[in-house]
Image 1 (cartoon, rainbow, N blue to C red):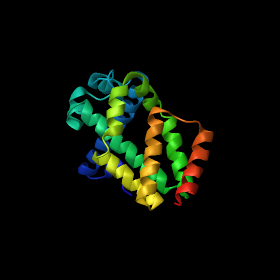
Image 2 (tube, rainbow, N blue to C red):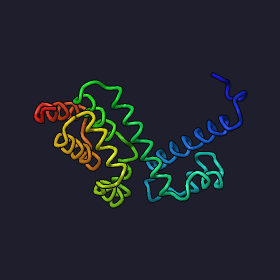
Image 3 (cartoon, one colour):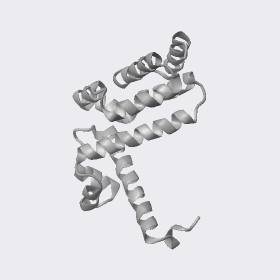
Length: 178
């Protein structure tokens, strides 16, 4: 592997671009957890991620684009997590824990319930379709997938305890014949 500073210019630029985007998305997630979605501004994102506004706008045209990229990034993270876990019950339990413990979702329940409700009901959005497909890879049956996705969505608005996550995931798998 070539060290970054000896790599061709396009590779260095790509790595810098990727690190900048990661910083912007991680900062956005943290700001949403602290202030909520509506209260988070592009200026906040720029300042907290330590990138200029010009750089931020070169990456994303507006806050909606940043949030959409953040959601796509989170979906990829969850998909990678799902691939590293064995059984369907363990996958559903881990996803449940991730959802129920999310500080960004907790703040959005308080500060942005309308935006959260809208996001949860837009089941034809490409990201929901990707999430559904990822769960289908685990459950192998469409009806089981629909139940699992509905169960996970419910936790966005009403998080559950780690013990409930384990028990309910096991019951869901046991009773739906995954």
